[in-house]
Length: 429
Image (cartoon, rainbow, N blue to C red; front, side, top):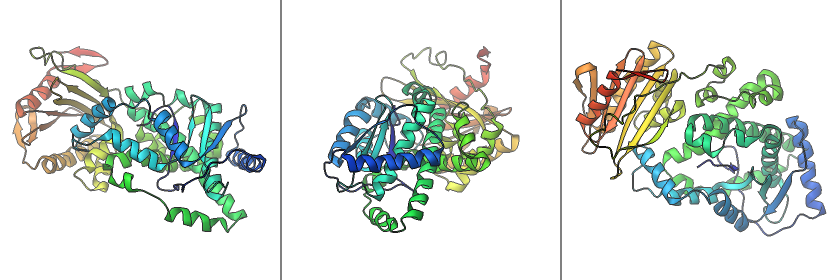
């Protein structure tokens, strides 16, 4: 859902804009925009490299831009493939129309965005006036424009990066949005100090927020949307308190490597790299049934592991279980009947972290499937439903998990991984 455009999702600390009227950029509005720009430049301590193009649009125009630009390459087929991934981890049912949900949430939540391909920022103008709300949104989007000119945002969150390593890309998006969120808060504080009456229009805007599409979406969609703004803001604030904007500017040259580093800024400052985790390819496992195709192979990372556990565990327990993540590799295979199998290996910072996750996952799996575990050879525990089985074991300092159609298949995947140990890209077995 996060593609080449940086867009302003108005959740948490941000505000949705009301219906707009058509308006051009006349001299008065241009002066108002320039005043915001100068204040952002001063507060953010970052200057533009060249002129920044901007366009004020009404609600209908912005909705058309979102659908025609932001979501033009997000196909029904892509949405369907993502549903298979989400459903496999328990985030949603396979029948969910994710393509429609994405359109509904996007058009409901976006009040502006910055197009990194065209180097153009779009902002809605409420009631044909450049009011308090518009200036705040404008400050946020202008920050993105400054980021792009100074730090090349496409190098951090390209389509290719999201496809290959979504946890790394989500961490980078959190850096970008957290930076802009912090700048927005500083600008809002400055605005209210200089015009206390502006708070009235802000409160009125909050009361008019339309959130029905987001509230009706699966929880994972809301979590994905909020994470870059919420966790990203906390990350940016933590670094800003260390050494102001100077340290945040340097982060773009040494971006966070995982959502773990966003959630735990102290680990970013240590620059603790995730461990490289490899799985044995299941091609040999499926040699007698070659219809299975590898469709995903990447780390889930602390964010998605936490969200996976939250499907059945309280949020605080899920967060504690996912902390101490050292790295993981999640391989998902799909056959011609759209049946799914998963091989998943996780490593941990300490044995205690591994034990905490394993105990939590035992509870999670039992609750998720509604079954008691059966213990097999190699200390493999399996839980099952009528449609899938999940198995888990430990091997040294690693946790191995499989999800498959049957218990025999899930056990077989675990045994295959145990028999074919992968180290630094080489298979020994």
